[in-house]
View 1 (cartoon, rainbow, N blue to C red):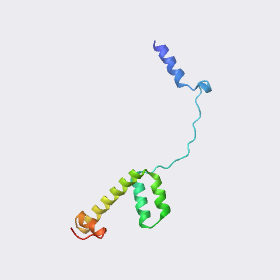
View 2 (spheres, rainbow, N blue to C red):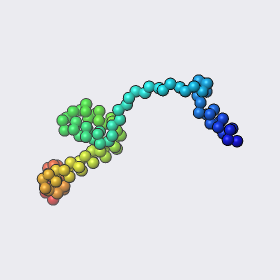
View 3 (cartoon, rainbow, N blue to C red):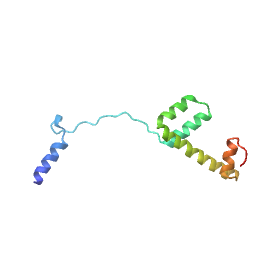
View 4 (cartoon, one colour):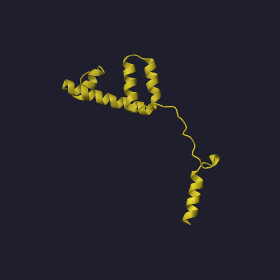
Amino acid sequence: MVGVIEKIRQFLVRDRGTGGAKRPAVARPAVQRHNLFEAAATYVSACAEDDQDGIEEAAAWVSPEALSFGISELACRAVIALARERDESPQTVARTLLGLPAA
C-alpha cells in the first residue's frame, strides 16, 4: 500500500509535459512592495509639499483603507511627539495645529 501511495505522489509531483524533469525557474519581474506606513509617510510628505505626482504615486501603493489607517497612525504619532517636545497635552497640540481655540 505504501508503494502505491508513493507512486501516486511521484506522479502528481512530476511535470507530465517534461517527462518528470524539473521545469526551469520562471524569472518574475521584481515588484517593489510598500507597506501602509511607507505609503502614508510619502503621501503626507507629498501633500505638505503640494506634490501631486507624489500624492498619486503613494496612493497607488496600498488600498485607500490602508492609506487612511496609516495617515491616522502618523497623525497620532506626530501629535504625541510634538506634545512631548512642547510639554503640552496631545489635545492642546492637536487643537493648536488645526487652529482651534483651547478647550
